[in-house]
Length: 194
Image 1 (tube, rainbow, N blue to C red):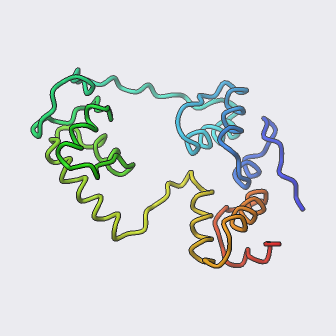
Image 2 (tube, rainbow, N blue to C red):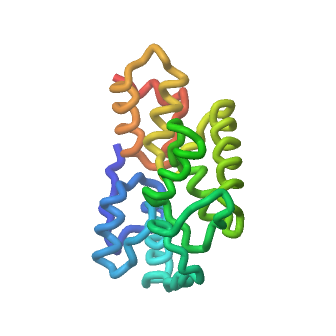
Image 3 (cartoon, helix red, strand yellow):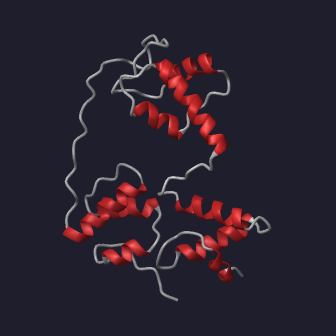
């Protein structure tokens, strides 16, 4: 059985991309090599790949400061309130949406992404978008973001093997993640279950 290499400056790009790394391992590598540690797991992986290719951290692009001074914590909200470039999911925004939509309102990733990418639209349009997203979620299988390989693997395993236990899914995941290659569930992997 091939051992997983040590994550340090001498690891090859191929070894790095072929194996699974916990976010905490990526953060440690970044800190040790003066690479920014902000963002998600995929952001860290891309920075490390750049570092392994070029021997230095990627140049960071400074975020543009928001133009709007609208305060999403304290300014009054109405159906006509426009979503600004400095939009924040605050308790006041949650209270507003609960009052408009009802107690079933909850922030979800798709809706938060919609809010952040729709400056200039109104909160009334946001309510329509929330209902549309909720309807779509009922009729389609929810998508798991690519950085959550474990969650995707476990879901796919359990859907394909409803008679098997969650512990069996975890055992297989632990085996597959220690191996070189993609970390996607495949029925042929069941032979590795003990």
